[in-house]
Image (cartoon, rainbow, N blue to C red; front, side, top):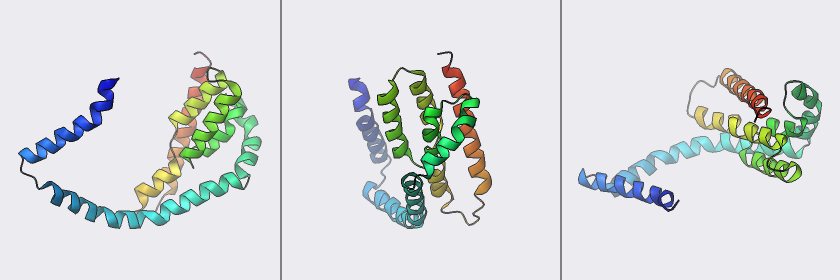
Length: 170
């Protein structure tokens, strides 16, 4: 375990040594990279702010809980426990909100329960689709987002269904 804690500093030293050996002007290269990053941050900010506000609004408005209760019978029919419906709905919007829900599920049902295993699969097999979409598509000129977002959401959902199916046997 001690080696793993040294891995990042060792990697940094290796890259630094390699750059010095190749006579790269490190400070100039760093500042050039930062200069290129500033416009990217300014481009990303409105998209990320919108996604963060929408995900918080989705949770605070009660829409998340209402949608979870409406969809839980259909999810249960697909093998997804109704107790994790809110997690399945929130994960594409918010990683931190999903982490909090995962903790609540652990404390309510125990970390070794079937529901907790399914929640772990739902958390681990999914991605914050809307956040990632904002980051990936912020710099593109064509904003045809519907198809990639639908494919990502479908893949996330299929992974949860298949993962919960596998959790029955574990």
